[in-house]
Length: 496
Ligand code: NAD
Image 1: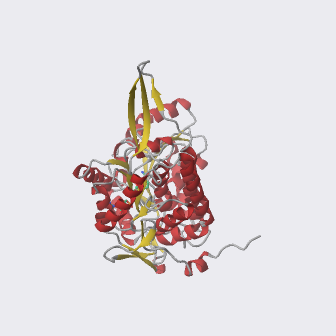
Image 2: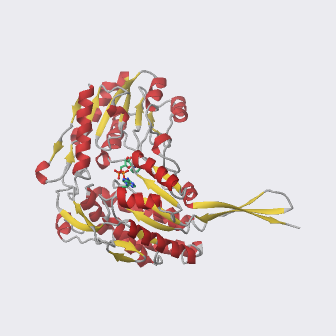
Image 3: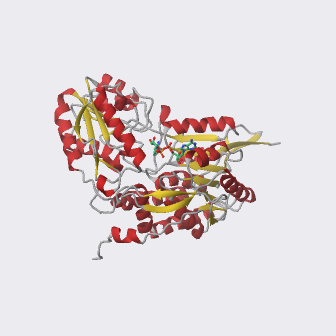
């Protein structure tokens, strides 16, 4: 049996790529600016990372455009692209320990999750799109005998990918894999809170044979680097994952520049409806706790609203409270930790402010609600549960993006659905019932891109992921993701 890895020891010697990746090589920002990466685990300084400005984004886009125009990637046979992307997935797997450690140090999630979820989720996605790309056929329209009308898909050109920090590699790969597989060039901007794994991935893609210029990575903040991507006149489409507030800005950037396609995966306030006939309350409570506390609640699909049928309310809530208390908050480098650090101090403060808002609004705090482990220099918040929440309270309406659960009560399925649909969002949703009619009725009535029945956060690359309403537009994952990164062309050929 091999000795378990001591991640604390490994962390001491961890080294990171810190320059931007433009035109196939690491390069500092043109003006030499850098920003500090502080680990949320203990406040330690990790690295100073290149802060890309407008000039760097211009360089990256020009490199992507040149690569696209000469066809070094865009005109490669799909099977050849597939091979290179599969090789990249193999290399990512081969560097799993290094990447998992980097992810954990940079954004604070437990190392066990980085190893079990983030790295394999990244390569699964990449392999799936690589595999798909030489199995998709174009179409011929049934126009009649006097014409041949071809309906073909072409890569859009240069894609900007702007991603958040909660699953840095996976969120990046949900954009990169379909965009690259389809033949585009990509300029990726990781979140300023978690740029390190994206910078490493770029070199692994190059090692796999991805031609220079096809993938560029420009670290920096939102108002400078992200905005430069949003407003760029030579970017053809943007794939964005992040908050609804910033998603709206990208729609404006597009209107102010070149009408680039803007695809948005934004926030959520996802409801879990627990009916009185729920088959297994204990199992459902375990799922409900995981839906809000996994990844410190930093989940777009966090099941942040728990809608409880009156007769089972107290019993169910007690079970969830038990799970909240049992969570092991600890150093993310300890393999047994299941609640790690919030990504940064500012975000932790925001979450704690919401706890104060909930109490001030009259909700009852049942467990948690405080910062813990402050002596470590890191940013940790206890799993937190409020009950006696009413639908119009801010903690029932606004995305907190932390481990804060709002429990509400309903009377009958109609009221449950009305409460569930009563926010600006529409990302995840779930119903727990043993009645097939109730399940189907709810699944049709719930205004959400994802409806789970007797489960939550089930995940597979084969199914589309995205939201209704202000949770966004377009879908990541599945063959539908290609819609975002390809243009549809009709070619009429007259036949004599
Ligand atoms: P955010 O919106 O603050 O940032 C997302 C990205 O946008 C970052 O790269 C950031 O640098 C950039 N950005 C910020 N301000 C910008 C500006 N003014 N102009 C251009 N770009 C700007 O979001 P976050 O805090 O990184 O992530 C949390 C949010 O992401 C939550 O709302 C969460 O629900 C959402 N999210 C959604 C999904 C999904 O698939 N629907 C998945 C994960 C996270």
